[in-house]
Image 1: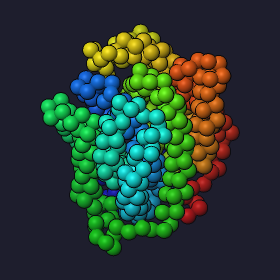
Image 2: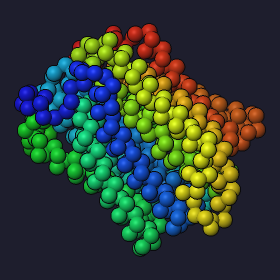
Image 3: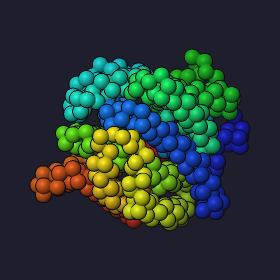
Image 4: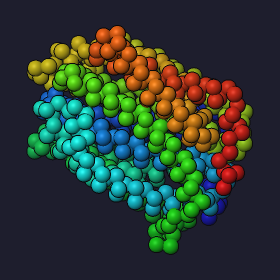
Length: 463
């Protein structure tokens, strides 16, 4: 099993030239992230063009809570990636197989619990968010339906996290492509043709999540011999040793994501109190920011897997070269993204709003301000993401949680409320606070990297 797993699944990222290897590994990650963001963006474009700002705000507000839970799935998927990357670098393939079965069983139980909680507390959460009254029905429908797809999201996240840790990026691209095709087809059918509004978008999203999960499971089943699992009750079970590592990594990473996203929700709640124009601008702006910043995030994601494998193999000089190469690549795109924000803000924003929407011009005007502020995000992200990849790649999830605390609670809320209310900047103050909050994780990553603590932090030796 060891030889077949090593040869046929994954990519050894501990040997070879850094730049070609980084680009080879990142390219499928980039395409997968682009496809995922595009099919999520299709939701916003379709709902915006066929329902209007009421639908856009509803999908965004209903999706905020589901997104918070999705970050939990992504965090445990990242935990799987970090752990498996170090296991792969250390050539411990039996533990990779045991981690896969442990992760799948654990994520199944966790996803069922979160689905029930999301549906049970739907109305109180939307009320807390100050969801605009005209968008409340849309938001409720979207949130309840999307919550039903969380088990597929959790399972998919764990499978893809483990594959990325092994240096395998092509299969996740295939899985998300299946989801994208399903989503676009269902979006057009259910929103543009059948006119189910936000509920149609939600059904399309769940169908896409189901399709990608099934594709991932089919891949595992076909390669079950290489992964050492047989999909029997005896094979698919929890292994305490690996579960403890996943929890030790996943809980702090979940806390990091939760701190960041929960404080974003608090800011969203305050922004929503300014009305539908502010709410829609913030929703659309966040979507554009994620889409444009996708290359820097993909490079950081790829660098994290490379760092993890090389720490597992104890090749520390190679880690430094990975960091330098990743920063150079991501910075080039950050400059290009800044140019888009500077010269094409209205053109980009208008893609998401109906031309005959009564709030069209007001949203575009505020959108220009949002995009100019976002330039700071595009310029700092290459450094923040790369240095944070060393934190996560080494398995120091507790430090990642501290970075989340700085980002969310101390900086995002502190700066946003200071600017919005203390300096009377209003909505613009919240836009600035969200951008400047990234300074916290950047400082944590820089200090951790240059002090060399990542070389002495132990994950595998503690088992």
